[in-house]
Image (tube, rainbow, N blue to C red; front, side):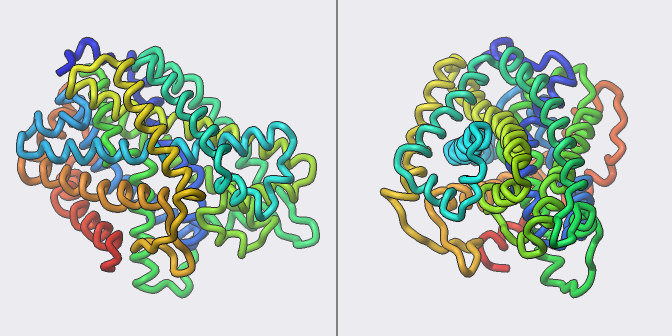
Length: 464
């Protein structure tokens, strides 16, 4: 195994928090969160999400960061260091980012394509119905943009923990936050002309819970959506927080840093909704709110086109911001696989980056061809009745809907029952820090979180 002095570490708590927040604040927050909020009744979804973030999310986040710091290992080898019988859990947690990296870089390439389109003044073309489908079904263009995005990701990971990941996060995260807030403020001030709808009307739809017609089925659906979103939002159950935790200094305040990641991530997710939902509501009305996963690449370009000449500028800023968020997340995904290779086989960083980047590119090309050469349609348990799934959807389904809940359930069993919650509590408070939610943590990790995760997994299999 690689020695710890070659692994690197974050130079400060701020570096760790910004890097971890950079991982957490990605496409999940800026793309997935707003469309789920719109689908699940706006304010009601927000309420459920915030409650889950400070209970369910906190439990998994502090567990993984503590495991990483305690073992000083990436996820592939960390779990077996705690208990040899749980080495399989390390394998599953390393498999998740391995599966995610190829298609995440493809979607990052899509964002890059739209960024170039808007920056070069062709935003109106991007608003046409056939634009997105025409792009992803073309044979060369998606592969080229995937390659460029993957190369940028690899270049950062080549730099290591300090000079690569931490340096990037310290520059990009403040810029990203300012851009998100700026577009959110602009979105609220919009007026729809003939429709009479305003950004403030859209904001009310987003923030005020609507309990009318609330059924048990709708509550459960919102709960499952919010819980699934938390995996995306805080980067848990994919080995990332274990790996980043292994670079976290023993002297730093772990509890405080985890709290800061929670606040930063949840704030950006909520502000992303403020940024997107009022604008869509003003120009496309309530029906625009049902755009689903197509919200960013199909609905939003139409919104920017409706803004006239200003739309190209706003669209450019928006897609640059999404590109930065996607990059900080893809860096953390690649780093997790690279760190696993380094810790398991003693491979040098540069070699590990090259190996995984080549594999990621090959799989990425195959997935890109899933929209042309290898095109087929399949129904997955989570596919909408009127929809179909392709290769990218299969990779996403396996990683996010199957393996991530299994990793999280395994972590809860290991910490809550095989070892003891005190192993995490002791690690988090070893410098004399206070852990405010200690009692809550014990109950959550042993009872509540595993039950919720089992429900989520059953839902993923289509059994609920």
